[in-house]
Length: 217
Length: 217
DNA sequence: TAAATAAACAGGGAAAATCCCTTTGCCCCA
DNA sequence: TGGGGCAAAGGGATTTTCCCTGTTTATTTA
Image (cartoon, rainbow over all chains, first blue to last red; front, side, top):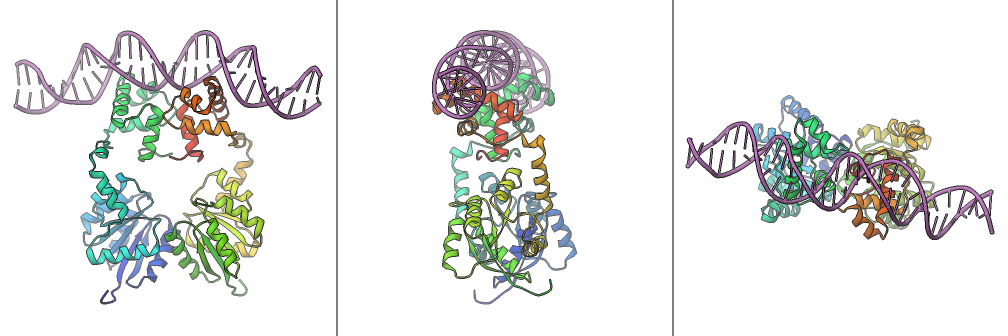
């Protein structure tokens, strides 16, 4: 670094203990200081319009109530494209990472990194405009692999509803009643999903749904 | 606080970003300062024997590789009972909280608290010797409720194995082969568990296992 | 040692899940 | 306008799950 600059950072995370702690840590980094924290996307919107100073960087959590990281990233890239958004999350699954990158984040960090990596990432973000960890690069490459690509998590509305209801103690007949469809249609959904996802039975479907965050425990 | 004392804290957490951040935060609290961090129980053991100064308080995460929070809490209460251990975890389920309290921790904090609550908890811990949040008190009361109590998560070795295998795509017949038991015995396990846990079918068992951390996704 | 207890195992039957194949109705478009 | 594609729905057979009721076997206890 030829000259000492002070870039500003905003942290968006609903876990206020983590956010406040991270704020202190980042303030010890020589080139960065935290402007403020926000509890979620909505909170961020309000604070951005209220505060007169715009941050250079936004550290964005994904799992948040009210307005989550996906919505927030989208809103940011549409309304404040000059702010560099860095996703900071526990989620390490391909779909989540890809989805965030598509929403325009400039990097994706896992929360279990070393503090110095965060410092590096912030610096690289300001110098080069992006930061891609090995994990993310791997994921990107992996997503191009046709083997994985066909296991597409692109579900129709009805399919998704069926999957979520299949993660309960309901029988298919009961699910059919709720979804206002014939049990045979439900059976069709089931059979099609089993083939596409290469699973053998309903337990496999439940595990798949949980692995891919299609439903909550 | 009549006089300003400086109590020492050690943080045990495998997420070094969180640990380092939290360290900075705690160092801003007037009565406390962090001695060092440890990545897990084993790391803590080494550092305790190496460093000459004992901490007053240990902030202990639960989910850690190598030596987790349960083992560590037990070791601490057996070998360093004078250190006050405060569990600090994301887990909010009754079983985990109770297990940690039984291992001798002096308090249980959820990671999604406000930073000021942590300050309060640390102060109260030194003044009174313990800190119990509302959440924990609720859980303690709840555990005394006979309605919940009979839903005991005390499983025999074979039952646990069966539950875990039931969370896969195997049929009961295949599970029987693996466990070297008759399919009828497996059916007996199943029937007994369904009755005890008040569940209707295998999906219910899978969801139960996941809710109670009996198996991983 | 006899009785009690609990785990392992079994028979039999109903319900649900799984599978394959076919039909119907609808929209699209070449 | 006549197929082609596709979601919805049905027929029917097999396997698996679920449930109730027992028997055998091993271990513990009185």
